[in-house]
Length: 97
Image 1 (tube, helix red, strand yellow):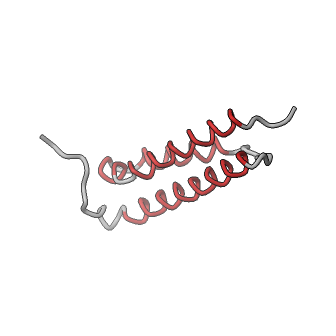
Image 2: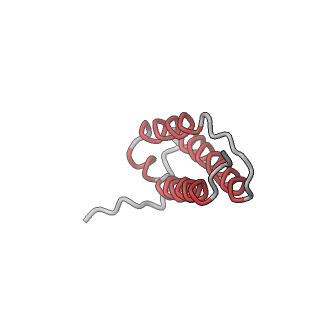
């Protein structure tokens, strides 16, 4: 039975790509968390461009070799949870008409 999770670092030639993708994911996570905090405080947020950022991150992650892409799994799961939290906050705190 194969185990897809690995504790070994990515090969050196892909390490910069993985690090850059992880940094992009962490930046997007910070953006989502800030937006969620603002929405919960009743402040307006501008989400323009968010879909593009997510799309670029996904495309970059999918372009990595399988093992390196899988090394980002936890980061992407955390991002998904933050996106879900923002979605919930937007439903619970709709902007004024």
